[in-house]
Length: 233
Image (cartoon, rainbow, N blue to C red; front, top):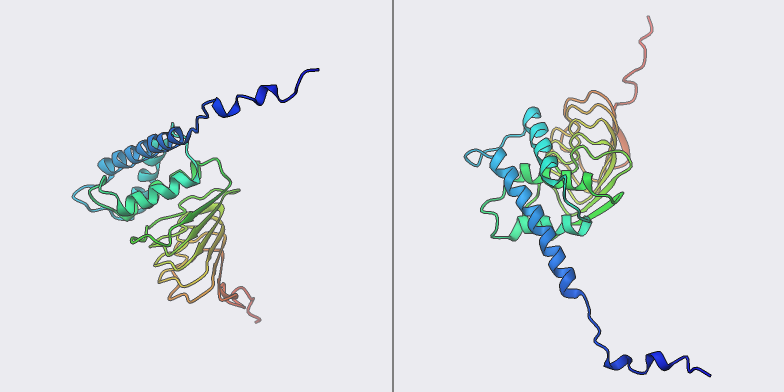
């Protein structure tokens, strides 16, 4: 009778290759390609280290970002690692939060995962424009404070910020949901055309809002009650 354990008798003599070095190498290659795309974006977008948030500027920068990442394959952990590379690496001579946020948003929107979590609590810099054009069916959760224009132009997705935001939160939102658990600054909902903004803390000021709903500490503050009530004659 054949001993079923014969095939294991020399198990300890076999060389067991742990592909950890291959995993690390693959991640290094992915990060190098992501960084290279961002550096090309900077070369195209930044003149004399000045980059202003304007409609045409943002649209053009996002199109360029999409172009530079179209052949890349990555996961949410790679996006998070890239954020910390931006914050701490010497490979990039300067950090400009506008193009950085556009590039991170493009990475999130292209990523195949429907839910992305970025743990950015330990970052020294608060990136602007995170969540730009977040599409329907995608959820992005950011742990940590963010900069200006968080949730700009959201297109049906759900963006959750476990922290505070600065000015122009939810600017130009079309649909979807923006949740900020702490405080936001001025011009919240500027150019907003739809969707919901829910702020767990204080809103320092509203912008010029076209449509949509804004809640402060679970209380509806836009539109105000009775805004559409007909006047009796």
